[in-house]
Structure formats: C-alpha cells, structure tokens
Length: 64
Image (cartoon, rainbow, N blue to C red; front, side, top):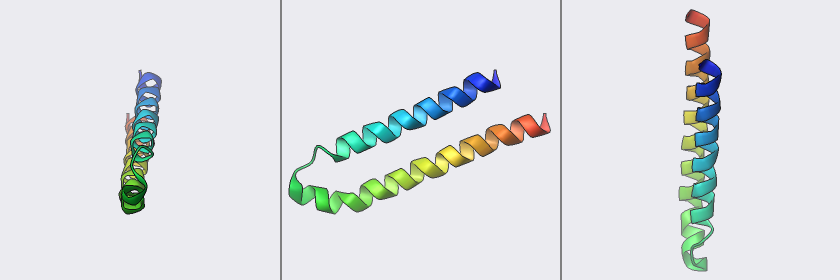
C-alpha cells in the first residue's frame, strides 16, 4: 500500500510540474518575462511539497 501511495504522489507531482511549465510556456513575450518569477516560485513550492510528502511517507514507514 505504501508503494502505491508513493508512486501516486510522485506521478501527481510530476504531472503538476509539467502542467505548470506547459502553461508558463504559452504566454506572450512581454508576459513571459514577468511570469518567470511566478513560475520559479510555483516550482519551488511543488518541490517543497514533494520533499515533505516523501518525508511524511518515510516517517510513517519508520514509526509504524
């Protein structure tokens, strides 16, 4: 069950990150320069959530 949950979290995070980058790439040139910081911020948030999710799963497995 834990393996399935871990795989689902990783797949979900990859899909979110890919979707964010696809949306960021579809803007006009003027907006793209302004949106770069937003894209970086969102990517950092997703990375942080991914690390916390893996840490949560590791803590669950370790303390169970």
